[in-house]
Each structure stands twice: as C-alpha cells, then as structure tokens.
Image 1 (spheres, helix red, strand yellow):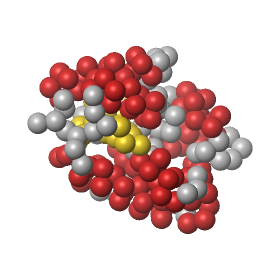
Image 2: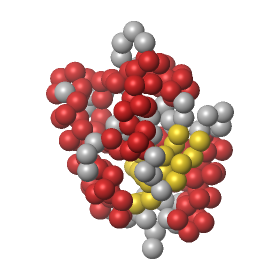
Image 3: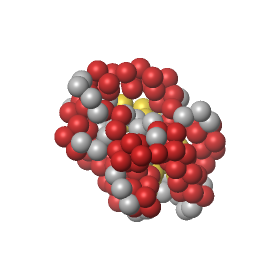
Image 4: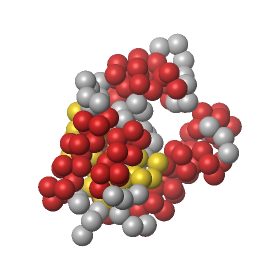
Amino acid sequence: MKKHIVLIGLPGSGKTSVGRIVAERLQTEFVDIDTIILRKEGKPIAMIFAEKGEAAFREMEHRETEVALELAASVIATGGGWAAQPGNLEQARARCWLVYLKTKAETATARAVPEGTRPMLHGDDPVARMRDLLKEREAQYLTADAVVETDRKTADEVATEVARLARSGAAW
C-alpha cells in the first residue's frame, strides 16, 4: 500500500522544490502546507506570525497536515517547524513515510533568506537563527524514516534520491 511521503527539514532545505519533482516522478499529487495556509488566510506566513502568533500558525499547520494525510497518498511538504511540534510526528508516522531533507544551516539560510518570507529567520543574523533552529529541531528530524543530504545537490538530484528510496519499497 502506498503511503504519503512527508518531507521535513529546515526552511530552505528544499521541501517545496524537491516535493514538486518527487510528486511528478511518482505521478501523484503534491501538497504544500504553507501554500494552503497562505491561500486560506489570504496573507503571507510572516504576517500570520505577526498578527496571530506562532502558536496559532502551528495549529493551522497541524490541522492542514492532518487533512492532507486523510486524502489519497501524495507528497507533502510541511513547514520547517511542523516536525518539532509535540505529537505531530507520532500522529503522522503510521500514515506516511518521513524524509528528512538534511542541510547545513548556512546552506538553508542562503536558500531561504532571499525570499524574505520566513518569519523564524527575521533579525540581524539569520545564519545564527538557522543554527538555533537546527539545534532545536534536529533530534526530531533525525527520527525520520530516511535522511537525504541536500548540500551541494540540485533539487533534481535530491528528488531522484527520494523517489528511488520511496520506490525501493519504503513507501511507494
């Protein structure tokens, strides 16, 4: 039976870029949780954080991920903090195959900061903040079913590896 493939990792690790390609290769749907929230709220994630706070955003993120997990098997890109929220990984594990897109804080920052849409990276030193996020979250990320390194790889190369692993019997 096919399972969802849920991509977790830091902001800028490639969850959205890689997820789109993996879904295309596996001929399934791609679900980006941040995009769903952005559309429903009609405002950027950074504005949701500013107006409603992180706790409200995390609740939206949890709810939308649960909805996605109830649908047909797909590739799901969660927000960077989803995996670090208590209970999320445990609740999702039976319905999905978790893939940690592992990247160094410096690489993730270089990919994420130019967009300017990542509320957890606002401030004077986004690299230091990304290091802090990695330190806070990596223990949860490492509980994934697979870890795929993304540094010095294109999204296409990472997607090839994720799809290959999924087809090898782990999920697809």
